[in-house]
Length: 123
Picture 1 (cartoon, rainbow, N blue to C red):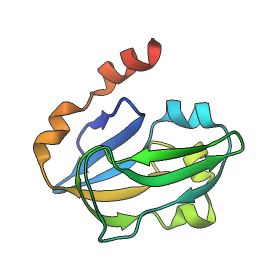
Picture 2: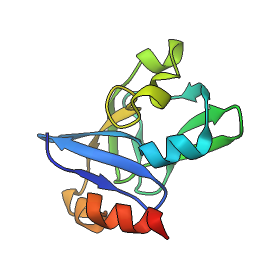
Picture 3: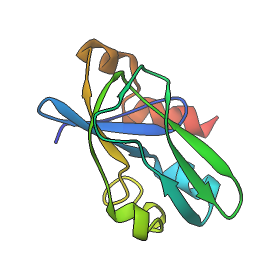
């Protein structure tokens, strides 16, 4: 897997070949608190960068998950439907939300690397 890239809205994407696995950052998960429900997109759906793709609900609030890049959803993490707490336990590993096939790989270059994201959340 390649390095994770992050959005200002706290999504991450990690490319593996021509698809990228997407989730929310550990920081976002900490801000939300206990995750109680995750609404995932349908496989085959196409989104533009910045579109709302999924919803995560915690005991504190509901929050949208946005597409870090435009493309087609090729897989979802079905384990989250029965065990949304995976996001709390492993936000940047087992708690991933969906996989997307980017329409324009150049959009990845517009995202932050880990160091830039750490600076972003330190503000």
